[in-house]
Image (cartoon, rainbow, N blue to C red; front, side, top):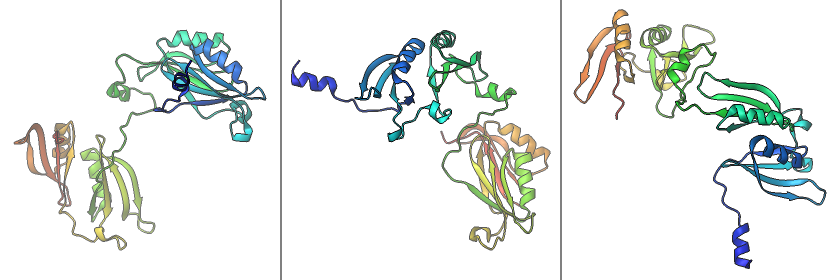
Length: 292
């Protein structure tokens, strides 16, 4: 082998992903276990003069995992020494049942047998002999149906992350009444309401989230320490995107709000839109048009 060929074969490839690095109390045994349980193939191992494995790499499908023995002098300590681990591996496999059986046969402890989860995937959990938890996942072909999941009684709700952007701030003479209107009629969700320490009818901060994305902060007018609260109420106008303008429209009509523009299609979009005035005089428009 030429020097050039040797250099090419040993040259490190750039790391383009997050790679789990597992510290165990017996790396050699761990490498054997991962091969038997998960079909891992060893790429290489570096063995120190003291017999400890300083670094090893295995591949499970397209995933790389690094493994080493404990090196307390370098801060590398295994779960057995720590009394457990707060991290877990999630391994996508073609057959959870088969891999779960292989793992148990190789010496893993079954923490959760294979089960079809509400989110659609079939999953199981094992604890390997070295203290690391492995969540085995067989992804659903259909994927997660958010509406179906949220309609079930699982104790959890799928929510989209709040995106960066503009938070609308609206001031009211009666902020508590406004918050009730926004929640009970419009459909906002009450996330946080902070009353004044000396007068609970005065709201110094609130966060009302729109289920389809966005935040509105309702506060009391005239707060001494905030300039934007020193303004006339009832002059704001806001547009809220919703996939169900008809549902919001019916609630607004039932609540007796003043109609500014009745529900109908806009000249710029085929979707429905309408505008109403809240009890303080602010105009709220709701529609399906999202700018696309």
